[in-house]
Image 1 (tube, helix red, strand yellow):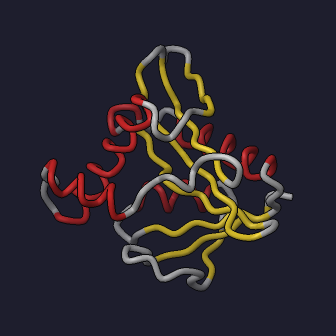
Image 2: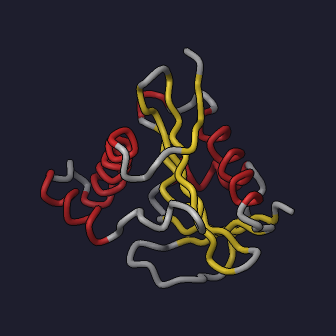
Length: 160
C-alpha cells in the first residue's frame, strides 16, 4: 500500500466532491440493485447535502494515497457531547486494507476535538461491511435516534 494520508478537507473541494460522488454511487447502486444513473446521483446529493460536515460543528476527512482520494468520513455535532458519523466510505478497490479502521479512529478523534464523548451513526441493513467494522470497533446497536429515509440500524460508542 502506498502511503495513506487522512486529512481534514473542505467538503466543497474538488477531491471531496469526487469521493462523495463515489460514496453516493456505491450506496445508491446497492440500494437500487443496479448502477445509479448520474441524474439519480445528482438528486441524492442535492437531497442529502454534506454541508453539515464543516466547521464549526463538523469536519470532513479525506483519505488519500498520493493525490488520489480513496475514502472519506464526516463528523458533525448533533448536540453537546454527541457527534454523528456520516459518509464513512472506502473505495471498493481499497477495502480490506485497514483504511476503514484508520478513518474511523480519525473520525473519533475529530469528534473528541468537537467536544463529543459519544459517537452515533445510522446505516442500512445491506451495508454489512460497514456494520461489521463498527461492531469490531466497539459500537453497539441502539434504538433509532433519527428518522432518516434510509436509516435501518443505529449504533453508538462512548469515546470519552
